[in-house]
Image (cartoon, rainbow, N blue to C red; front, side, top):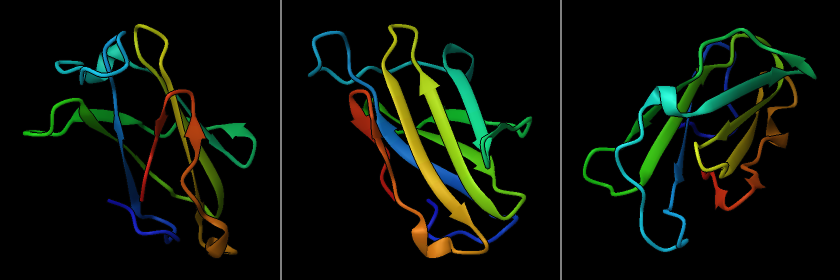
Amino acid sequence: MANFPVAVGDTVTLPFSVFDIDGITPLTGLVDGDFTKLLVHENTVSANTVTVAEVSGAAGTYTVSFTADQNGAWYVQLATPDEQVFGGYVQAGVNASLAYPAVVGRATMCS
């Protein structure tokens, strides 16, 4: 898990929970390819790899990981097949004290 702030070159890993359509039952069994992913660095779409993995033994809990390879603000957004949307911000390097997790859609990514 990333500790905010992050250093340039750190792998950022943010946990989040996914629930079934009822909003209560944890949704398990999703794989990396099931998610639509977007990574933005300083208002520009990044080509860095974004990976999603289910956390073993934690029903419905997943992590999203990417490398913050430059100074500045990073935003990652994910969508599940049923259009649950999750997002999180981190600040790498300069002014890193501005980093914070974000709430988007129906879940929170926490540090």
